Image 1 (cartoon, rainbow, N blue to C red):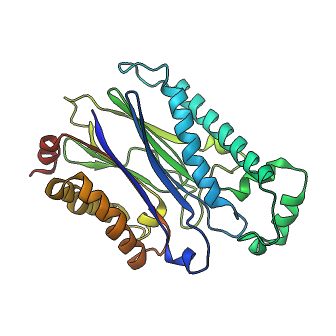
Image 2 (cartoon, rainbow, N blue to C red; image 1 turned 135 degrees about the horizontal axis):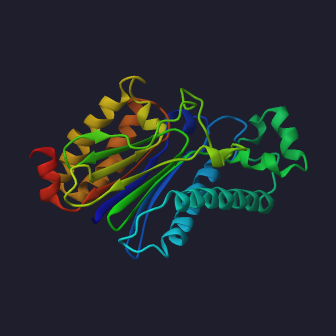
Length: 296
């Protein structure tokens, strides 16, 4: 299945009013027979003072490793558990290399944005010779989706959501939940044992399967937090079905993408979470299939 792709990040009020850069990153990539999207949410806490760079490097590293991972996979080959685990571990290793490279190429300056707010405890850690502390400065979550052949791989570490609309018209969250992600606590690429904390799901895209994805949405927690915590699934499903997908049918892909980036996402953060928001999607290019799925 071929998808239309979209990704955008918007700056949340609680950050831009403090002069803090947007912590979120998102992007899309397409090469050969692969389509991929990713969102990442850098931690806004004072000790993660380069988390905006960390999230950007997470998305870039994910795409680099996806290209390597998919290079030798044929369109009829199924992702293996061993292959997925190896990909996750390599992604983590390369992100850590990227943030350490950034650290040494950009030594801390006393007037660096956000450095003055770092706790004395972490200033001492960052000044030490222990390289294990460096990734904390760049802490971020990550969710990516990889479409190749008749399957889609979703890989996630940290909070945020992956929502899938299936051909049977039902919405699902296929990635196993992480019990440690609650309120302002989340797992992260910067955790010492991050390699244990990846979760993933593989979606079957066979055309005759009622569970095949028609649309896949990835979002950072800034979108989830626009609604009460125990109701956000209901509101996310309604947003995707009645606002975004309906707009795609009525207005087409180009106009919907523009309205999402310029109007809807800024409105949601301003009236909802005040947090940075990232949203990315893969939506079938088959309008007839999309209409049937939505009962249009």
